[in-house]
Length: 377
Length: 127
Image (cartoon, rainbow over all chains, first blue to last red; front, side):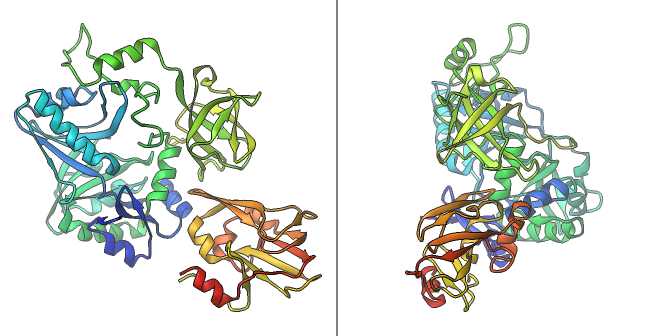
């Protein structure tokens, strides 16, 4: 049953969006069209409702130490107003979720979790705080906070135009940092220069009862620059071109961050550097780092026109299965099929010729370095 | 509500058929507004080739959007006599002009079509 919805469902329905179930939420898949929405973000700006994402507030004297233990990043070293991409791993090193954590105060972190993993991340955070004996609390604020993203090259101008004169200046924000901003109408928003599209962009965390006002303000201020509402279909094609992993596709309990090429998010500390406390999964992850992984996440670009899709086998030139596709689309920006896939390590080098079994026919593809698309290129 | 023109016939697999649906006649085939909407923006159409024999209810090609892929079924039996070459460079015509320039192929019927639906019956199917 899809019984969860964001405070913007009425806006989506008024725009005649195609609504689908996503992790139990009624979410807009598309409004005008997947490709037009994708191109708007690449060339101008797109507006996304991401209010299904989980906002978990970790507070208390031990908040930093608790997250340092619960997550794989060196969380206690985060600066105020910083954002950090990190993960929660199981004791065996498998990924429970990938997260963006914001430090809103010295003893206040906001953990943003995928909608599909919110309940489990919340339970794990509580369990790890208790078992570690930390003086910290976790509160699930998902239903009281709306998340609205403005993404694309025009986003800095648009978000600036949404602010009161004299408010903190969003265009001055660095990538992966955040600020409290006063929006027009006197609404306070926690604004971060983060996103999941491969473009410059902002994510605006606002109280749920103000979501509709902020959504309409963004549409009005962005209209001249070409901003249009964008659905989950465009979000998926944008993140895939940008080589960003999606939990449930590239990331899962069965894979470690090292297989996904994201070993850099796991911080073990250094003998000659700042100390790093223990964390869940440390021993297993250290072993995986040492031993290497049998499979590696790679990018594939198709030579033909038929696209690989999640679950399709990757084969070598002799037709033997060497891996599996995790995500694939016909890329709107490249004009060719692109995919991410786990392949045996010996096939992971850029330039290796492979094929994907696309519904019974082998389509030639080349291994390429990720991402497929980099802005300003 | 999907657009279902009164002057066409339809298949249960969401293709439309235009023309005199009798043996020996040439009919035009496309996918319906309902199917195009469900797929999203079509970016690649693999149509049958001229000269291919197609059979009603059988797969004869595929349509790909950014989000999904869907098989193309022939709603009629016969020989393919023309394929819409425009779709090679403008597959989005399937979305933007579904019942016009977005046609996919033409078939010279070798059999009297059966099981095609009139607009009312097809409309019931999409509810």
